[in-house]
Image 1 (cartoon, rainbow, N blue to C red):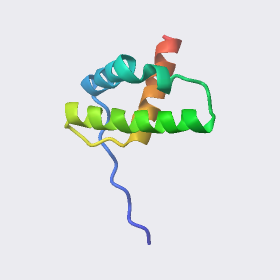
Image 2 (cartoon, rainbow, N blue to C red):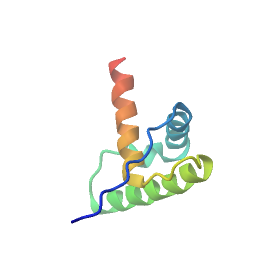
Image 3 (spheres, rainbow, N blue to C red):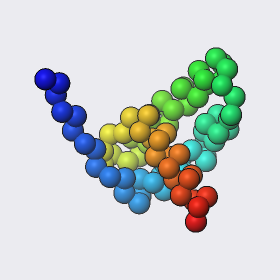
Image 4 (tube, rainbow, N blue to C red):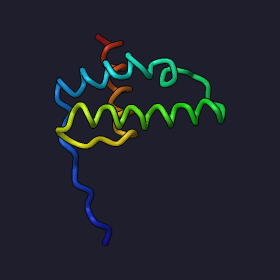
Length: 83
């Protein structure tokens, strides 16, 4: 049997604001870029990892992976568009 993954806690309001601010402050140009060539994807991956390090150093409540940070940022963008 495979071990069951432990579920992470929900994002707090502070974590969402911090994530949005960090993306807009430094990484917006690379994360929002619609190019999908090899160089752009490498830049995006590097910026996701930088974002992970910065986010986890600021918000020490729960460790977040780059994949989860990206998906949460995408969800934040979607909800802001619908409001």
